Length: 198
Image 1 (cartoon, helix red, strand yellow):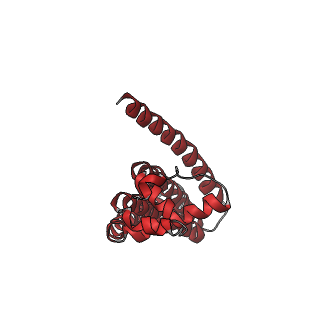
Image 2 (spheres, helix red, strand yellow; image 1 turned 120 degrees about the horizontal axis):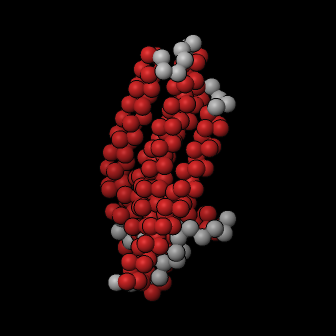
Image 3 (cartoon, one colour; image 1 turned 45 degrees about the horizontal axis):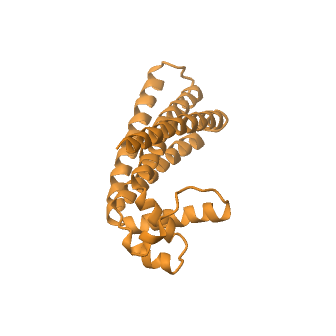
């Protein structure tokens, strides 16, 4: 019990540190990029950030909904991504925490900051300064749009995550397989071979 608590605390602290670092990186990159592009390109970037949050939310939910049994035969035949898919499912709590809480929440925060930058760009382009009625109206409209797309996208993503969890996890497993085999970067702990053979 104590070891389980220690493991949970260690994982929570690790996730907190990773979130801090990634949030800082994403914020700096998004602000530096958005400050040098046209507002329409900035808007596209905001929508891409929202899409990233929706996709990772779907991946996290799929990992908790999928069954590992379909991947056993594929793993025995050494199908690329099968072992990684089993590892994802067996570490669903951590995988979902990273996808939903880390990437998902960071995407929400960064998209809000990025949309504010885009609004300021549009306001300046139309000759309206910060705090003007036009700027405030644009801020409300874009913030509402981003919120609607985020919530609506995640709702749709949840449907696919639950009803197509096997395909989604397998897709994630194949991507992780490429990263681990080609780039030699360990993403997931190895699945237990004895358990996989059952």
